[in-house]
Amino acid sequence: MAKPAPTTGAVIGSLILIGGVLAVGAGAFAYTGGFLTPDRLTPTKLVAALAPPGGPALGHRRNHAKGICFTGVFDSNGKGAAISTAPMLASGQFPAMGRFNLGTPDPNAPDATVRVRGLGLEITAGPSVWRAAMIDPPFFPVSTPQAFYGLLEASHSKAPDAMKDFIAANPEFGTFAGWAGSAPWTSSYAEDPFHSLNAFIFVDAAGKQQPVRWSYLPEAPVVPTTQADLEKLGPNHLEQEITARVASAPQRWTLVLTLADPGDPTNDPSKAWPEGRRTIEAGTLIVQKIEPERDGPCRDINFDPTILPEGIRVSDDPFPAARSAAYARSYNLRTAEWKDYPYQAPAAPAATTSTNP
Image (cartoon, rainbow, N blue to C red; front, side, top):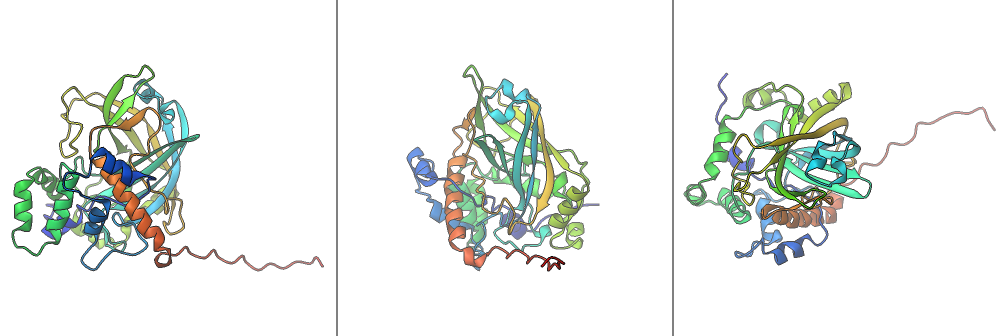
């Protein structure tokens, strides 16, 4: 069945890809690194541009606002230790916690209105922490943080040629638009791949450095659907479906590390690396339990992509630092608005009777 092309509004709405979370000192890091210059793109400006016309959903992440928590383990096979000393790439099982989400600032958006899906993930190995924020497209729509801000501004603009002018100035956006219009939809998070997009530097025991991008590829077979058929399943189908699926059996994704060849771009996530690059299947993410976000373990976690273990560090890609600064701004805003997204009061214990005096 032919898939209907998404409307311009749906495509633009799905492009708001930077979702909220923490980093102590992230703003200072971004400024001193020069990642938000020369146009002086501040975290405040970037996060403000994410807001829909009616304003942000108070108490929620400023993007990827609709999501659900999970817990599980990362089962490492030890093969990743060949290129990194990160402790969670050594052979063993490590606690994992994360969040499936949709790339929208609206926590009540119907599933079928959002093209981009995300995975926030934290893997711990003792005191070491590896956080990541990934999405299902295989490349980012634009090449720089400044261009991303320009995309947000153009999408909100009332000028008739705003998007036309933006695309002319940022032709890489056409590649993403092609993906958005042709890639199959799925009716389950369990069938979606999730990609880091940004390049990171893996460092082995001898100090050798290797640029790497990674993906989590689903074990579940992909059953393509259409946007129209997904809409028929209901506005919150994805959360309901993954909850029922995981309750029936744990769900798995394979961590695939892709190693760059010399000359592959490491500072532009809008450019996919060519096919045929060396890959390492480093282990399996096993999702064992789904929990609602409101009081779930992922609610107050900032999936800052610059929180990395020894053996992994940022590359010359400007996005992780810019994302870290924006996530910190989003985190500060939503935690200050806690009255707008309060914790649910725990259920009162059931009354009991006793024959004891």
